[in-house]
Image 1 (tube, rainbow, N blue to C red):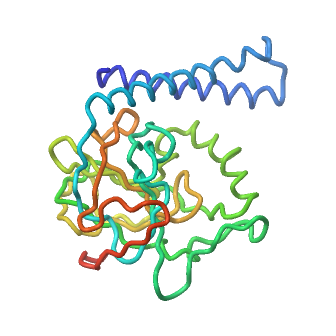
Image 2 (image 1 turned 120 degrees about the horizontal axis):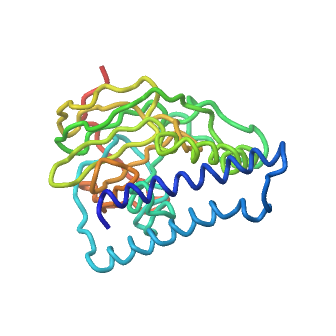
Length: 279
């Protein structure tokens, strides 16, 4: 499928979700002028598009399995992996937004406070400062050019309880879906690594950018800090490689971190600090 066609399909899918959720919202206040079941057609259409595009991505992967691209790790210190492509592909349950081989990692320092564990009821949420990942520097994984960099969205509280998770999935996720890609990934950075490979860092901390679009960066250079913006339950680093800078149409590319590989879910790894600090 051509780039233009993939972009058109992505726009149609997003439009269908917007129409569906608007109908749901309006239906709380007035009777829709058509049968209730017809209001579900946009959602069914969006789901059908997702199934077709996922099938296309699987077939493309099977026909031409992409080779992993080795890069440096985007962080320093001691971390552990969650939602790793070492355990399943697509790692986040979807090929959408180039996430096929994406990974999430959380800070696990040997000394100092540990990250709060999820609870059933109380506290409903934690401030971001309770998590050791919050504010951790994010480093360039290779010599690259900054294609996109933004950090204007707020860092929200964690979604660390049953009530928080329900709110996250039933209310917040709906709003972010309507808001589009930027609201899902939050503050983010896209780097052009050359040879058709791009790196994306999501959920960047508000106001932490040390680079801007067009900047040339060196491997290990500090780009920003880890935050909790966008579709995120706690401060963590979401990292992925992809074949283009446009998240709506990009396809995931597998990665390997130099000296580490691809850590599996729950696997702890340590990266030596060699990067430059945020100014």
